[in-house]
Length: 121
Image (cartoon, rainbow, N blue to C red; front, side, top):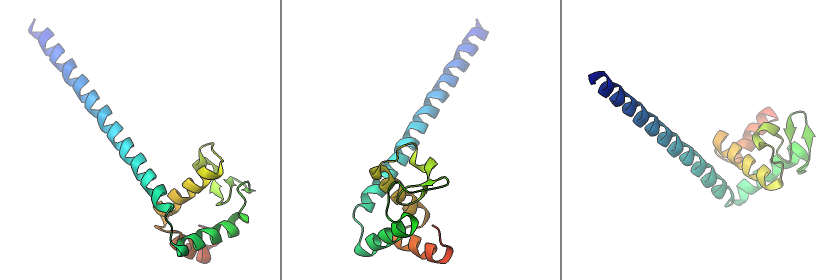
């Protein structure tokens, strides 16, 4: 009987630990998606300098064409097609480009500076 109680106690502890793990994963995923939404929302309020740098990069990457192709890169900002996750729409290209630039460079102006030195961003 004592072994049965210990086994039940262990099983309950394992179930509780799994439940806690799953809820933490859900919180982390929610936080990450919230950060992406905030990044995209911030991108919609670009200064004139940011807008100009973004246009400049688009022109130099694809001539401003959403359907431009170059190897594994696609679209107006010549993003790796894997970043677009199967959604080649202009809206997704804009959002994905903003997320990429803000996470990697902090701004379109910084991305342009990098592009001028390296001829890619």
